[in-house]
Length: 217
Image 1 (tube, one colour):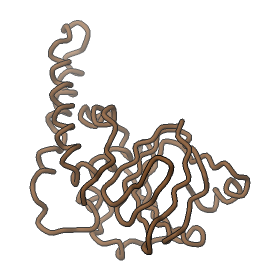
Image 2: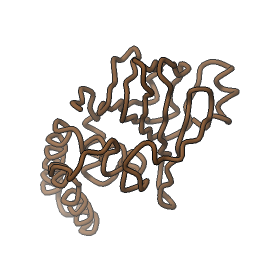
Image 3: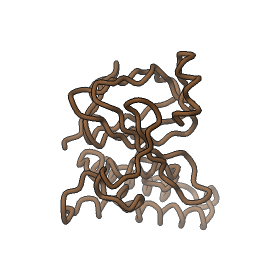
Image 4: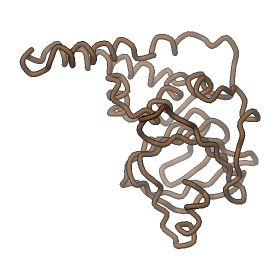
């Protein structure tokens, strides 16, 4: 797994500072655990954030805010991610710890449409964003859609292609509400993705919008 699509630097900065919404932080941590490029970028983001705080006058930031932010920067899980995992797993360690599974066959998938299955991931009470595992059948296409807010998708298995490019296992699509696309699954195997969303998807066709409450995307 050698990712070629990475997290946006603003996402890394928010993750380093501990201000990234919980759903997005899980996706970011899962990608970082397998991506040396983003691990190095995270170290840089931590250094930049710490330097900026140190340069700010004391009267512009409270002592409590300074201490909490520095603590978040120090606690960002970059160093643990650099240690080799004791065994190879199809599911990244940050995600496996959250869902209590290390294999896709252990997940209680729910079929939402022909060729589409989903698993809703429960987050702690008060957590922001929605987090789902999405399994799309080989050769199938998602309807053309946009996003009601930020969306980060991490490919865990298989691959898909859209007008942005090809996204394979380990790649992450860090998208905003301005992007519209129509992902098509490549090859002869299902594509499994971890998806964090801020708001529901905006489907372009009437048929897709009518199905949306049943599919749950």
